[in-house]
Amino acid sequence: MTHVTLATLRTADAAETRAFLADVPAEQLVAAVRETSDAELTAIIDRDEIRGAAVEGVLGRLHEYALLERLAELVGTVRFDLVRGGTVRERHGLVLDHGTLKVLPDLPVSEPVDVVLRTSVVGFVRLISGEANPGLDYLAGRLRIEGDAMLALAVGGMFTVPGTDAVALDPTTLDPTDVATALKGVSAEHLREVMASGFRGVVLDEIFRRLPDFVSRRRAARCDLLIGFRLLGHPSGEIERYVVRVRHGVAEVTPGDAERAGERRDATITCEGSDFLRLATGHLSAITGVLRGQLKVKGDRGKALQFAGVLDIPSAR
Image 1: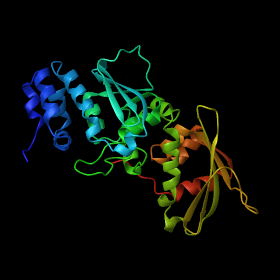
Image 2: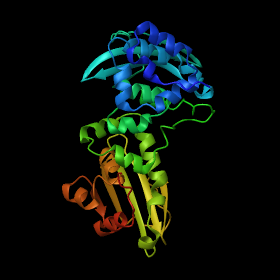
Image 3: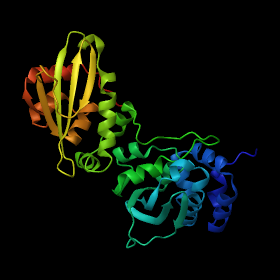
Image 4: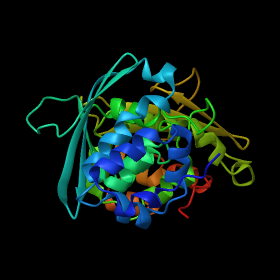
């Protein structure tokens, strides 16, 4: 099998770019993207002469390395706004309809769509090749989403590992360390935007699902804590509630606000969803949050801080 590289496109014109992207086997094309650095991808593809042709060529091959079962479930129109230097250089649409794909080149901004994905050309290529996790890119601000966030993440989660039928990346399965790393330097405004989107449920579900894994058995060995959480900032005004029990070094999470017979909650922590995300990823300490009023504690404040002290919060790389 001939080894394919994207270096062929360094001096290609639009017609040559279309021909190259149409002829290269999908598996080899994805592999070539994965072995090319961001700087090289920018120099090769983000040229005014070929950028539009390259984007259309990549979108036109999507069905060949998408997971057909997932693709069959998607319905909607996605617009990709590709930016460089803060300016949109390309706008292209993609209509998904139960397994069929239709590319809409140079889609006017006035055309109605279900979701807009705004990223760089390199970010687009990484996303479409299944190499970048759209969930992490969204958290980090490298990918901006306007509209149906779950459709956007589904698009990013339908690609296979080259040469296999395995999902390349599941945007709804977030590694805690990767999330902590993605949030380094992210503005509070952006986090509020993320936690006001359809991605909020995914983030909270993952945090509370994994929370028992973060409890230090040694530090929590003699603990008996019952801590409630009330999370604000849902677009509907709904308050999400969880109860966490830590006993004999083990944590158990229960969605909702119910207490078992004979139990009395030690403390209830109320905060914005975005502040809870920062707390759960090591970007906000419990003490700082309490002192600043970002974490409001009802009940035994000492017990609430003791709970924070038994957690091994993932740290950014």
